[in-house]
Image 1: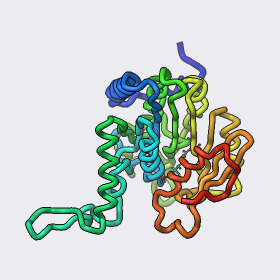
Image 2: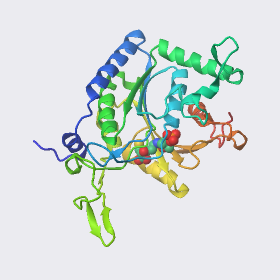
Image 3: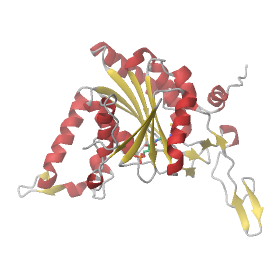
Image 4: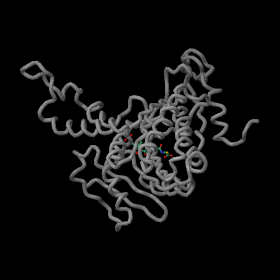
Length: 327
Ligand code: 9Z3
């Protein structure tokens, strides 16, 4: 029987991603491994990077957003340090924990190396210390199976993955944390309206004729409000759910974060503005608005500072409110 619920309808009317079953099996195994190794292990699902909205089923063109996955990849490293096992649901080819230090840098990764006199390739002296630390942390995460990487590309894949993962995490209860840093599209093209093949500039089916030629007019539907369903039905009631709110207008940020918190009834909304997101965030939870800022003097060289501060600020949540937390 067809359902009236827009979330349920969404999953009936749009196709499950090909990799979903494989990802579910990996997550099941990951959770079982950690619960059987240490029943106290906390598991976090970090979502990261932008979601695409394809315009064609055999996709040549798609709508995308700015997110590079810095927040998610950086936070994942801090979660591992804090003792979590991390499921990292990320946009394919966006930044990854550990490799992010070298992969999308302005240098080519080969610039971190040099050929020594004996002919061996070695890490340049000035990068040795930092790379050793990153390598140790990476090897620790790998050896202890603390990081499970699952890629997605489209907003549709993201939603199917999120639903499955939340359901699989139910038995983890209060030891499960959702940290939703992915930049999720608010609009999409439903499957039944999507073109199969590359949209042709010469056809008018997808566009309207104008005096000068053919415009492409794209008609997008709203993505169902999945956060509500996540909180109220997919995830265990006991789990902790942290969402991010992104705005560009400073006058809207806190009120929109508060609205989301009231509407969905989850634990915490972390607000950030597009232009200042790397050094300033606001924690909004019931009855509390708390800014966390990287001090001005440390901003230019602080690529990942804010994620460290967020961890520290959360530990100090009962401490007196403070505008800036020092690095
Ligand atoms: C965020 O606000 C993240 O902090 C950023 C991180 C995407 C700004 P970067 O990847 O950027 O480090 O370059 N994420 C959440 C954005 C979002 O889509 N939120 C939804 C909403 O606002 C709710 S989950 O409605």
